[in-house]
Amino acid sequence: MESVSRRDVSRRAVLRGAGGAAALLAGGAVASAGAGSAVAAPAWSTLQQRMSGQVLVQGATGYTAVAHGYNPRFDTVWPSAVARCVSTADVSAAVAFARSNALPFTIRSGGHALTGWSTGTGLVIDTTLISAMTVDPATATATVGAGARLIDVYQKVASAGLALPGGTCGSVGIAGLALGGGIGALTRPWGLTCDQLTGATIVFADASVKQVSASHWPGLFWALRGGGGGSFGVVTSLTFRLRPAPTFQVWSMPYDMSAAPAVVAGYQTFMATADSRLHGELSFRATPSTGKTSLTVTGTWIGSAAALTAQLDALVAAIGVRPNARTVSSQGYLAAMLQEAECSSYASCHLPPQGTIPRVPSAGASTMVYAPLSPAAVTTLVDRVRAGLAVPKATWTGCTVVALGGAVRSTTTADSAFGHRDARLMLHYLARWSPSTPTLDPTPFDGYVRGFRAAMAPFCGTGAYVNYLDISIADHGAAYWPGTYARLRTVKATVDPGNLFRFPQSVRP
Image (cartoon, rainbow, N blue to C red; front, top):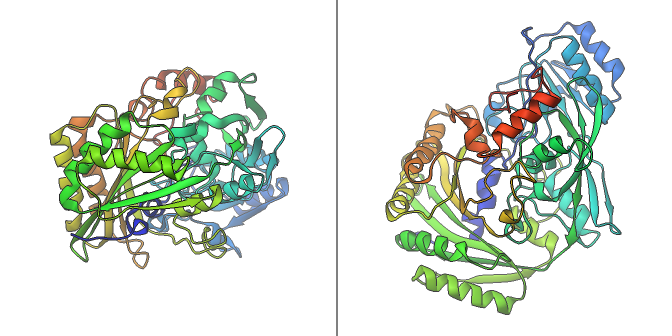
């Protein structure tokens, strides 16, 4: 069987191909208007007069560079205009303009939505430039503009000797990541990104600006902690609680695919009760061009290398099969986050022209797993991984199995809208194809990831992670927010009763 490096098979590569985080929705709200997507030129000049940032219409200099989000499969969608907001006041002006003109609009921060809902044919309200960050070491807090990229947040807090639990895609926007949850290397030790949120600035449907926290608009604050982006307003800044940056032990153990059933079974049993300082995941990949599949167990540990040795010995014993190799490296917080993001340096960990992260067309889906995978479920999972070899024109397909638990269960649904507190695992399915053919018919790739999800549903149910939006999910409220959707709808009815902020899978009043 194929033996490849951790870099080749890791979830970081999966997330990069998926558009992160992913995903990772930063908005996707669509105005309730029935007007067409085109707006007369004088109207655009009116909006420009009300903004400090630029309004770029089709044909304007600079428009093409900002017209699209991360995933090039949606590059055939061209907005009528992009409002490049540089402040909360700009966002307020853009929301008021869209509402008064009955204009369809979308909200974009990182632009990584797997469904393409962070772009549209009307107005795109782009918060990318609202990216200023301040860190207060005395209070161990950071206030971050909604457009800041995750890797920039990591660099900023690390420079103060502090850390924030986040995701694994460096180019994803912090707003979309945090509002939907935020799963990464520090999730089991410290909790989700949304669990660290202590306050936010948000533009309401009437264009007013509110400061939201546990004491001001507490219901909305609850909703913003895991309720997803784009349903309640436009978040323009977020304040997070930080902790002293730990030292990481980053580890990897590749296995032959023949051992996959034993690896899945042993991994899920061990991680169910493992020390919460241990983060671990299984990374499967199938490469049609080579006809090969691969499996690597990867993760991090915040503690000593000696203590990690005992943990990994116990994990291998639970699996019952020795890996092909074991590598461990000790790294600081920023270095570990760069490796998690598959970046060789901070400078490279950005989209072009600033960095070298490629825009890769992809399809994705997910499943949240609450009960141990049965032998039949494990067999189905491994079979579906191998089925990825038959997806025509895919550069690779994959599945990542991520252990949850630990600190995720320390915050309840009474404190946060994230509905999957008791999930044991998250399964993330992905198919990607060549950037040279971004507009290739996505049907086979969508079919693969959705087929994977459907195949696992009889064993796992229909729960899904909102940051991996999946348009094929019919009852999205129950899938993304089990046990919290009814309360989310109540909050929605309070702050946006007219349903101005909406998209196909938003919270409905």
